[in-house]
Length: 258
Ligand code: ADP
Ligand code: MG
Image (cartoon, rainbow, N blue to C red; front, side, top):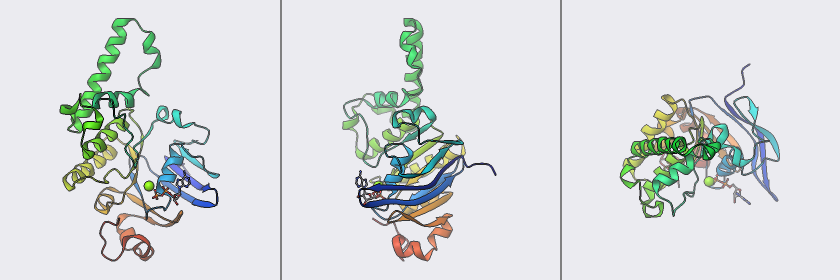
């Protein structure tokens, strides 16, 4: 049996007496979008925080490309090819849009380039800036290249956060509620973008999201959490018709909860 591209194997997370994640297992195939859904407080962000190594599960394993991530500290994660966005946007608000993308890129710009002769160093910097501009352009943000992140509206800050995450050229992308607060047209654009990232660039995506229109539109598979436990797993069609999920989360109307 070949091991999956990415997996959580029976992880537990406890905060004092609170058992926030309980024996959770899931796996994601390369180039697929795997959604993690469930009510507020179900343990979704905690799970993502384990994968990005902010938290360490008290038991279980997290495996990526055949290796355990448990020995990897949070600061080394982007060097392994994993990037994330945050439920509460984490941009450098006093930096420009371009600078934020360059920060995201820093994991893949060789550190020793600082010691290169000036001309070579400037070449590397110019290449990085060109690449960052292309990324901004693909998000419709090139006109905001020199705007401070704090001056962008919420939707554009969300897009910039995603551009920053992609700047490190991740193979695994972790997204915590990327559509929250976006307008319908931006959600439609995000839908197209996520599918492209997975199918054209082969990026594996773990997507936490309450906007069901997006989840059902892009996910190849879905895991549903409730009170830290997996209550269902399957394709969007299977999840939509699962009685336990309807009871705990979706409701009878099949509209976006929360
Ligand atoms: P979700 O993202 O599904 O809304 P979270 O993973 O943020 O849920 O939270 C799961 C549970 O763990 C909640 O009860 C939350 O209050 C608790 N929790 C999350 N982070 C911490 C923490 N750092 N310390 C204590 N409790 C926490
Ligand atoms: Mg959360």
